[in-house]
Image (cartoon, rainbow, N blue to C red; front, side):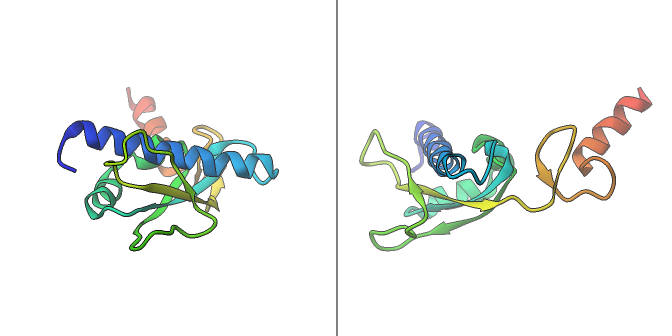
Amino acid sequence: MTDIGDWGAAMRLARRASLLAGEEQRRLGRVTEQEDSSMMLYTDNPTTAALFALTSDMAAICKTSAIEGVCIVTGADFPPAAHEAERDDPELPRVAAMWFTAPGNKCPRCRLFRQTDGEVCKPCEKTLTSMALN
């Protein structure tokens, strides 16, 4: 996977897999919004795994509060609780996602679950401080 189009396709597969995992949790009544979850991503391709692990906004791409990790799966099967995204092209890597309860508290500003020391999460605190200084 070296073509930038393949990378975009892999990102779309990750998002599709995370939405499948989140939808099941909403249907079961465990979450009300996708952002109430965190995800573990699985793939059968080491390059794709590295891409997912090194992409700083992977949680935002997957519409989740956090990515707990990225696993490379050898063999034919993902874990039973993981949801595999349907591929448009069989040459693309296989990608799946598994849902977890998001750690931390829900930030009232960004609505993501994050570790908070005060009222809002650290990224929101930095933004608010920066806005106050201007």
